[in-house]
Length: 309
Image 1 (cartoon, rainbow, N blue to C red):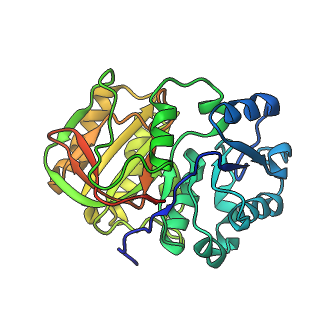
Image 2 (tube, helix red, strand yellow; image 1 turned 120 degrees about the horizontal axis):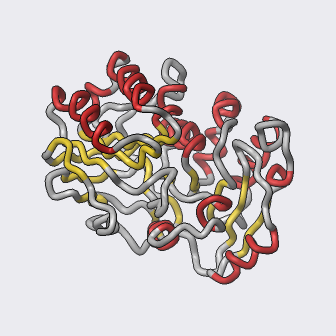
């Protein structure tokens, strides 16, 4: 396993081109609305064929979705890659990914939920920063409130670099589960997906990381089961700190009690309530990047540049 820091990726330039792919589930797309939304922000939207397809619960066949992903990374005209939605499908692509191609063509890659499997695989085998952030349909075109959009573009454009604090909206109070300070690579995503790839070559490399977790539509006992799975697999004992994002549908008091039970014996800093995941607003986080988590002061600080110009 590697503990090497993820490399920065090229910044999204002004008047750049954003490629849209659907590596997981299908969704109806208002193409005109999507194009106008991007144009209003100075970007051209390049839509890949799989976005228009539907194969049951998948956005096209595995071959189509994989081809689009590879094509978007290989195309020098594409400056960043945005996912249409989550759902399910990305784990089916992992053992066919061309990591040499990705490693040779690093660029911002954005998504969350089922896209977590790609974040973990790219970080481990291609070695560059990816972005756990909003997707086109439900988040950006869905009108999620700020700082959903500004959080995304400030990172992709390089407006936040080493030493920058990742600002969290004061309207959504954070909870310190365990105080303390830790530095490490920020890695993780959807808790169910992290657990789903355990025992595979794409499982999370937890050594010294700041573990980020979020989930949706999972009752408390399932969250308990997922965390217990990671504990029994030895992953939680390896992490330096934990940042808990939105766990939609779970009572906050009950969740905080479970987090306390799970992490207090580990004596590591744990901060909960970060608005990232299946929530509104949905803040962007740089996966694989070195960060400093101060759970007592309720701050996350970038310790490296995540993009370069």
